[in-house]
Image (cartoon, rainbow, N blue to C red; front, side, top):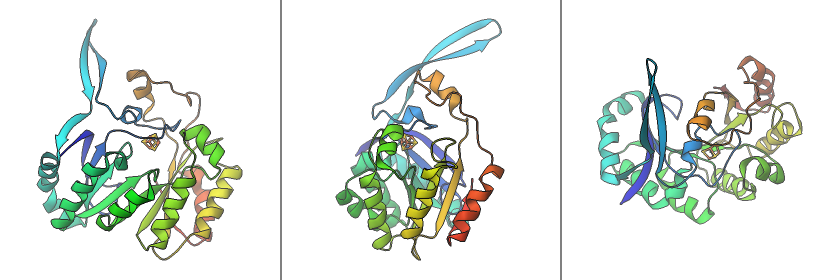
Length: 265
Ligand code: SF4
């Protein structure tokens, strides 16, 4: 079985507990304005031209985003790091794009990791059928689940899809006792210091349970900006300033008051 992988990050420390190998699968059904991996959205392998300056000369190279890999090849990469994973309580994280878009491939990777007793984390937008999520959930130890906006129309405007499925899948996971950490990208003017900020907090507080009591706040940053030009994608938040950790202090307090453990990345 083959899938399209667009990156492999080793020794990752922000994608779940311990030291992890994060496999980024290509393709995402969303198109968030603030996406810092715009090259991950298309499900196809894409070619792009990179320019390299050496002195006064500019050299152009054509490179691919995305590599076709078999489950066996990916597992070989994961197994290389298994000793560090075991020592640190880490494991595999599947990310993207949206890993559920390559459902069969992702499921097989998760199953093989569980056979080897490797901890598994799924970093997901939650935009998938509940049927697929149900099939995959027994092989996932931890869900890193994105909640971007509360209002479905606003979600559609900024992420390209409505969010009813995302909310009902989140509620399903929590109700069926799976371990969930919600990650919220905090974007000035879109879901920060406005009604959306309040509505997200209210919503998450209403579904908090023993297996969902941690949220991660991800302040908007410009790290992916140069990629928009490099991959010839439209950057719709060009003028938006970055947020700092300090600016999220009062929001983090509100989540703490609501009973959550909060991490600001
Ligand atoms: S869900 Fe994630 S990968 Fe997909 S477009 Fe949004 S930010 Fe990018």
